[in-house]
Image (spheres, helix red, strand yellow):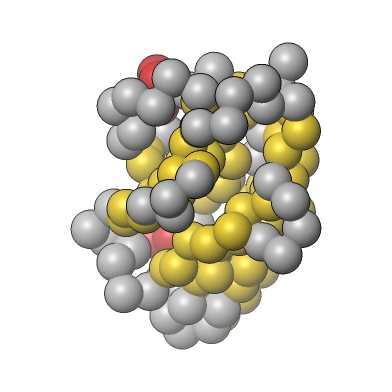
Length: 124
């Protein structure tokens, strides 16, 4: 059973920056994907970014390209999301997720394990 623990998030003014981290434990395979999704109030959960283990292949939703950066953390099995130039439309609960099947990486239904979510609020 994989467990994910998120940290970071909070309240920031438009144009500001925030960082999120996700720590994973319990992976049974050496190849997997870790991703960030977000869900704004009244909207469906949407893909934000993913990174592969190993290989560090990354991908981003078009709306965050050039503003968000996903990376591995210094600690083993940790993932970070650096968010810059935040806008009110980035306001959402951000979820860390992981899957070991390595398939359909932008589809939330492909992910088996989820963190508890962390709130990101961007004020205008």
